[in-house]
View (tube, rainbow, N blue to C red):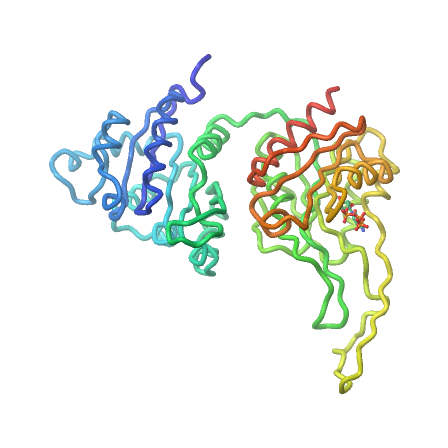
Length: 402
Ligand code: CTP
């Protein structure tokens, strides 16, 4: 079999993290996949790993210093690298992300980034607190808005001993992202995907609302990957902290009623509906125009009315559309998912146990069971949501063809 990256030039940017050792494995995988790889290191990366290791494995001199010896002063190999097909920054520390987002120079990696301007994949690695910091979030959003692809860090034990999101993604997943950028499979061309994501928000009064902790990550990952694989994608999203993915028609909304209207409007023209949104099941019957005042210790009684079941309503009208639902359960996962698939007239349902710790709602990973109309239930292992998105798109394609 032909190596997937044969003939492609990749620059691997390594910054100063304890995860730098994983960049060695990534380099090995890239080379094995046929890529010609040049390594550029940030100022601190050399504290964790010797340039010689990268030099030996890549077969090229490594750019480390800005003003370097005679060898790098010729900059011949850096010029070569500027014609690269892709830059992968892995691991990207909080400091390096800041430099890249702000266009600062000062070390070989930051300088290269400014000179390069081509397709870029960034795999962050840092402590969970740093990863959650607004400055880091803004830098990531800024780089994404300029087209950088991110391979999100995984959750797990971090070098500092804490457990949380921040651990560099596995080299195999970063390689998969590089393959997708360098040779995207366009197997969804000609299909229109309608994807819903995030929570809905039902107002109580002008300053209060009912909602749920859905992050939107699952739906956004599906929308982003479907678009990358050539589909026309409409993403109907409740309020989330995420940036709309590239190449997607983005329709924001707040209330279940608004989401209902947008899904209805776009359903007839779609081929596949993937309903990941955590639609609120209840809305306040009478939304107060003014802020509700406290009345001493008297309890506040709200009357809630059920919202309409968007999925059930549109799926009753399906003609050629393939309809996928999600089921959030706390017990009897497979049986409840099967029951929802039947009741809502779905083609596929993805069930997840939201009572299990560390998966679902806000998390970057999930453990799901995929159930089809024939009653086949496939339990998938705990996987990053980005991976679940890819596998689910494969499964939808396979089921549509059957
Ligand atoms: N859904 C919907 N409209 C609603 C509620 C849910 O379209 N008003 C969709 C969700 O997007 C999901 C599927 O229905 O794809 C199942 O949602 P879930 O919350 O698991 O189930 P419910 O139908 O709300 O039933 P229950 O909460 O009683 O389990």
